[in-house]
Amino acid sequence: MRQSNIGPLFIGSEIYRGSSYGARHPLRVPRVPVVTDLARALGWLPADQFRTSPRAKPAALTIWHEPAYIAALQQAEATGALPADLAARHQIGTLSNPIFPQIYSRPATGAGGVMLAASFLAQADTGAIHVPGGGTHHGLPDRANGFCYLNDPVLGILTLRAAGLRVAYVDIDAHHADGVEHGLAGAEEVLLLSVHEELRWPFTGPLGRVGNCINLPVPRGYNDSESRAVLHGLILPAVQSFAPDVIVLQAGADALTEDPLSRLCLSNNAYREVLRELRPLAPRLLLLGGGGYNPWSVGRCWAALWADLAGYDIPDTLPPAAQAVLAALDWNGGGRPPPDPHLLTSLCDPPREGPVRPEITTRLRAFA
Image 1 (cartoon, rainbow, N blue to C red):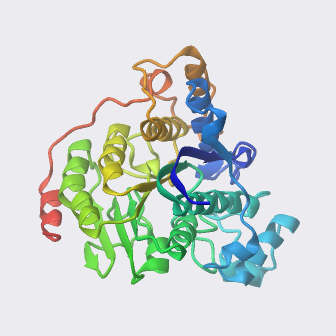
Image 2 (image 1 turned 135 degrees about the vertical axis):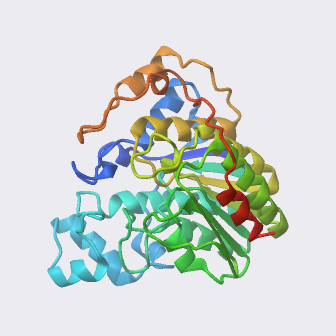
Image 3 (image 1 turned 120 degrees about the vertical axis):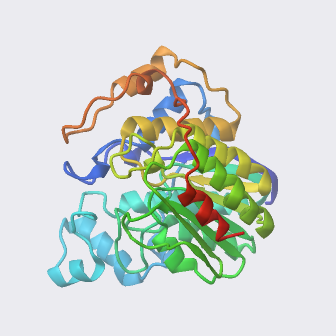
């Protein structure tokens, strides 16, 4: 049955609380559970706004992924190993994409949540849904890639397209959305826009526009002022001109200053500004997670985005229950320094403004 409006909804799962890529992997740290716990501590997750993510069935995943690859992931989860030839063919069991106990069920849960959100939005005239476990934008049809075993943004966009919706995908993760571009370059009624750090893995997404793909690599030190210049000089005009039925925003939090896997210098205010300015440009919005490897900065950013999406007020100082969530976190190994004090008491970062450097203004002219 079609609805006039859906959401705001938050789609999550307890599978993220009990799974890890391993003690030496950047994804040993908690992320989605931090968002969930902060939202609950702040009273931002009433039962009518929360949905438990289903696990996508193998047949659903094969709308883009190869059946043999899905079978290999299931085999790796069932046995804890793969034959060498199969592991090499699908790049399973590498340092970036190790075999771990939930190697199939965890990404299939993320994909299931994103596809459920897409189906909800396709059945409504307006709506907004946050799936922080989504955003695995590097996955390829027949192999794992860049910490990503499945590509839930592609699966979600294909679900939206099957309903006839016009989709703008905006990716502000520090890393280029190579898997999404691989899957949807040239796709009708889809716009792909990625802003990512230059000279960083996967070393794709060169400056410019080719067909439906817009790529803007930015230099290290990318700050809030530069993010605002990019937002108003590229992202908003491109999305507004495209006139989508739905915006999919991948908000990987690894562009924040505290993240160990990038050299960008955004505050979470920049993420909130992107969401705030994009929201009026389409009747539906799907907000995803993505990268982010500092548990304090990731959890705070995605919780703040949920507050903005759902209309909750963010306090200047967190109440004790929310502070306790942040105080209980650690790096789970790795010898990294403790967090700055503000990461334990507030959700909003201090602004990280700065000069808009010539590298930014010159590159924006390429799209004028």
